[in-house]
Length: 441
Image (cartoon, rainbow, N blue to C red; front, side, top):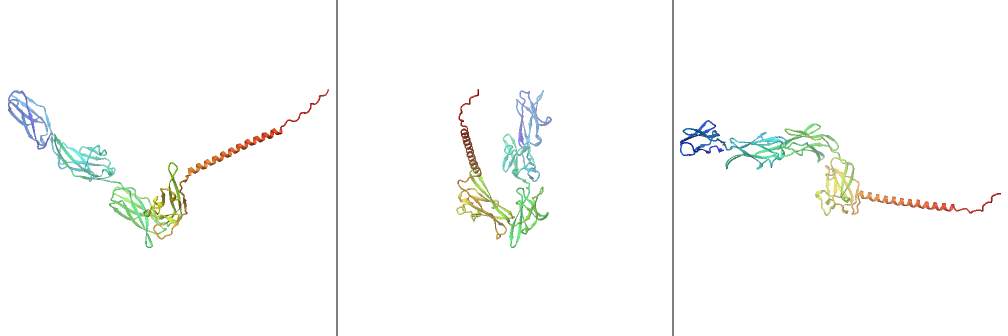
């Protein structure tokens, strides 16, 4: 092998031949390249060539003496053209595709032969061991089913080697973009008060996907708003609201160049807080039947947007941001979740014992009336017995009582038998014997 434009030397010798000897260098069986004549005393014939692309082929020497001729073994010369103007091309172009699609990258050169290829992803070499999901074949890198983790910057290097000489040509980086399919949109709405009127704020969003996407809102199948978002997957739309009045059925729609999805419907209605408010208590136990936590849930029978407040022994518990561990140990050891609907007591002690109540009012009306629940007693002591322990003790007491009753019954039956035997013995005393009556003659 020899690089293009380099120099090579073919050497021919026919030892012990009759003198003089004429040597000819022949390519591909018929093309005479050079000729050396009248060599004396087993001299080597050297042929020096500047390598060109047309010189690639199979070479042999022909030696001719006065009376005979012979040919040598053949040697194949491979002309190696170094790579130049290397770049990365893609299918599709530009290299942008949705997850699960196919992307094929090619390491292309303006010219070059006998080349090897090395790929880099985010400037780290790609191998079949480090990247088993990427197929390396020839000058191509194939992603059969792209995933979000395949997104990044790719480059390649085309290189050749002749003996200890290596020549390299590298490409610039190409960005591969993997788009994520948009998930089914979700919809929610909140209420705000502006003077004497109310306004609804409808939120439409998707949890995953690649922007840009078009998000629109329809009420009773009529589009009332549309926006194209380029950086996020959420949009907000204002709608008029009247307390206690059904304002229609709203749905969100997200649309991309390949998808169009609708959310579940939601009724735009703001129902004022009312009805019955109550507290439900649930206790939790460890594997050894020890009471570990309690969960208090505030149930509101009517109302769309409740604001929940908790009271312990008629003293209000603060919000999470107002917790002071010295003033409110209950909330310090607990947590409010589900928009304050649930109070979880993670640590139970005498400080957490007491009467709990919750109350609710419309979240959009700070001056509205509260609807309160009945007080529920949560008593936590060191000797608190759970339901299983109570049932076990009750069962043992019942069993002991039944055993005592059984023993008493057996004792009474035995005593009754003894008394009956004594009466029978008394009534069966032997009658006095009379003198025998004499028989007649």
